[in-house]
Image (cartoon, rainbow, N blue to C red; front, side, top):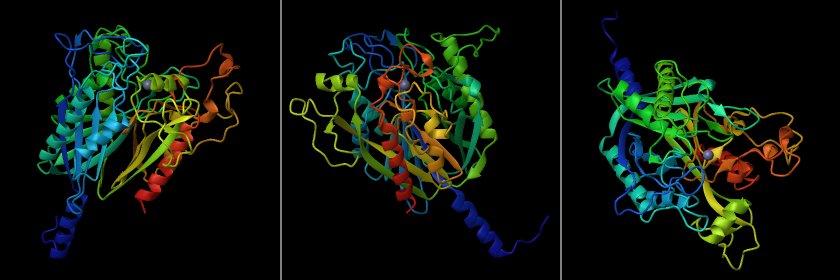
Amino acid sequence: MRISVPLAAMISGFLALSAAAVEVGFGSAEITPEVGGDADKVWIAGYGMGRSATGVHDPLFARAVVLRDPEAGGKVALVSVDLVGLQRPAVQRVRVRLPGYEHVLVSSTHNHEGPDVIGIWGPNPLRSGVGPGYIEQVIEGCVNAVRAAERGLRQATARYGVAADASLLGDSRLPVVKEDQLRALRFTGEDGEAAGLVVIWNCHPEAMGPDNRELTADFPAATIAALEAEHGCPVAYFTGTVGGLLAPPDGVIRDQGGTLLKEGDWEYMKRYGEAVAALANEAIDAGEEVELTPFRIARRAVRIPVQNKLYRAGFLGGVLDRQAYVWEGAARDGARFHKVKHALRTMAIETEVGYWQLGEVGLAAIPGEIYPELVTGDFQDPADAGADFPDAPLEPTVVSLMPTERWGLIGLAADEVGYIIPRRQWDREPPYAYGRGKAQYGELNSCGPETASILLEALATAVAEARR
Ligand SMILES: [Zn+2]
């Protein structure tokens, strides 16, 4: 034991401690729509259209994490909503309501058991499934969650950890490639108590399947409940890489008696969510202390062409209520798309890609469902000759663009533009890859084969801009 510590060492030790700290606050607000009574029907998003809600199994939330750099003073907010995919115009309206924040990100969990917020799950192809006033309710909920998190700001240190389990993911599309890393941040307050957890996992919230008609946040609700009970602190769950197509697994989750459980069963949803919570605990146990300041964040707005005929029909028919542009390249200029005048031109939507460097941890903010290959680089090589562009050059991968050793990816970040597919895997025209008689599922919910390269180039630019 050292008896006397030189004053200089004491001071530098104190400074080192305060430099490692960040201020963090967690907050949430309920965003469950009203079901039954005099309320309009609530159309559930995520599978086929025309699925109306009969009740509420568990409430839907907006959950916010606010971070403040005590030295530089900047404030940022990350919000997760239990929805299929909040669109960027709504996210921009949340930002307008939160002056004083340098950056606000709203990401959807991609919940397949919550209300439609895009429009394509209504009673028929000509009627939007978005309930009147519901987007306002969600915006209000996001703002209230951030305000609640801000009120709870406190000094904390953070640990970042990773744990992997491929058995907790099913992949229903060939080639089988999984992003099986769960990433977690655990905050500890000055009193030594847990101040909050952030969990990022890569799985479609669709444990309850296409026949359920009670609103639920799906398995993330069970993951959050288990972790909140164990750690005694708030938990925010974010969805990461879910393209290609990562979903809860078959043949893995069992009840207490050992009987195999299946999609569409509340017990399956609960047990799967708890298995994800157990993986999060492994990540937390393996975690190491990290600095989360300074913040270096950049966003790039880009346009992507919408070559998908269904999306285009939805826009022309009015169920997709979103500003569109005439496609003139990914740069931001270009005319607004007028339905009559431009009906024969390629339309484009504007979206954004972000890079959030929080001290030693880099986060890619990707506005949709990115395929795991584009994240990890595990491309099938050579591509299947039956694909439409088997010789297309490979896109840059997220892992190759991340400048920090510790990183993460938030999917459906600030937008949901659908699947982000490697061009080499694009397969709409016969002959089909893997000798199949028809195309695999995926392209039907993608803007087009250019999406991936445009978004990953934008990520590269955002990384460079944030670190300039
Ligand atoms: Zn999806």
